[in-house]
Image 1 (cartoon, one colour):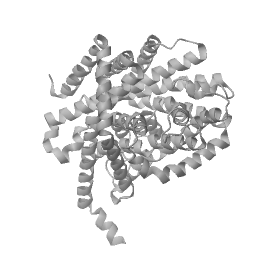
Image 2: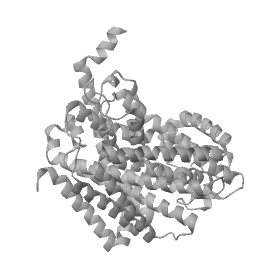
Image 3: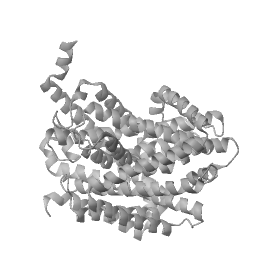
Image 4: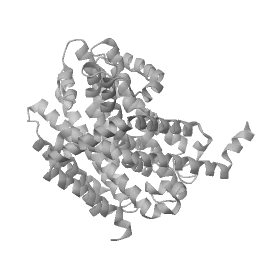
Length: 503
């Protein structure tokens, strides 16, 4: 076995065993993963909250620190992609399918089904619904992506290390990262990435099925979802064949155009003034209560603690599981950016766009239900978006755009995922072979299918939360390693002293 492919072969073996177990003993696998997931959520919820908040604080420090002037590469390095294309690529990779899937279903759930504060159907429930949705999708999520991406880009482009997770831990482990320790770290990263991306692919297949079911009365079944995954697999493998500069770049720009059109249609046809007022009010409430939400664990209230496990801890685990995939991809396209520019655009710009998205789609759904026009909360999560469209102008057009957008996000996520996994399992190669990419593409789809077969969306969520815990430790080590390296470089360059003399 060639050393370059050790991570590839071991990861493939482990994940193949998961696929086989899902086929042979689906019920047992579902029961085991459910029990492990419940234990992790109960026992480590406090840990997730503290870790993610500390990561956010580190990112904010880097945003204002003098080391923010340091570039990801040589100081005269020019970015590979234009800023609009760069933002489109990181946004498509970072959220994608989940944003469309939860755009209406999360706010309406918090408002009408299960409130984060215990109230449902009230004016206060509307405020709480959007505030906690902002919390789940805002700067905490992007801080996780940012710290992983920044560490990889800094060590890779600034210090010419391999573009691997393990390479970022050299300041802590030294040359051990080039041996078995590094291989183990990269294998854990691969497993987290596969399960995180497979979860999103599963969500995409279910929502496409839900949209077709709502529009054309097509049955909602696992077999339809299998067919959807198979079709999209062929499409994203074609895209993967064309490479990063063509397939993913074109798809990312197309995603932003489609998402922009859908957003404008909903914003203009929906309750526009209500959306703007809700957005403005929620931004204020979000900023004001951010510290309290960041550490909210509800030790004395089982119902609210169950809500936190099902939503906040689930999301933190999802972002952590996605972090190696999104981090490596964002790092790959961010050469030539300064640390300050990188943190600002990765942390703040996508968050603002997401807040507008949820205010528009979630606000429109809540408005329908609060005013007694439609009971959107009675629809399944995958159908709620299409249920909202049916009560506003041009429902068929907006629904078709949404289905195409989900499919496009699906292809982009899978395409980006195969590229990143291929990089991670070929010693950081920027041009992994198509055979490697095709292997990962087929395996990603197979895992999504198996998890849907064993227990639907809940099985996807269970496996992702399980995969996130070990990688969360790696994220903590990456943050420490990055700060240690930046402090040493600042000392060598005299960055802090230069600023002090000027003042």
